[in-house]
Image 1 (cartoon, rainbow, N blue to C red):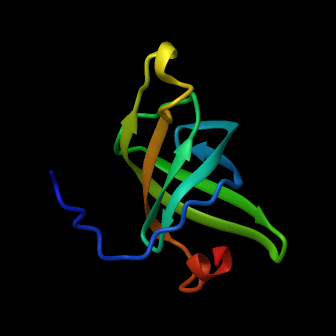
Image 2 (cartoon, rainbow, N blue to C red; image 1 turned 90 degrees about the vertical axis):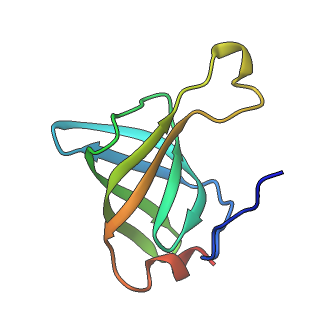
Length: 105
């Protein structure tokens, strides 16, 4: 069995997120999942290619968090498995305030 090499804290929080890709002005939506100080997974049916820049807005009770990052990977799931497995993409955070992750706790 493999070992989990992640050393940063992670939170499993489902929060609505709006995102735009740098080369596509259309706003898309998804949900956060598995958030860490350096990245997050966005559950969505729109799967951008790795390497694309993405801007995100996440509304929390204390205000809207705006962060920017780069698509690190994508995960496509066959339709018959979508009830048990999440489709979406991972984002490596590049531009955010130092405290952005603390707002989820």
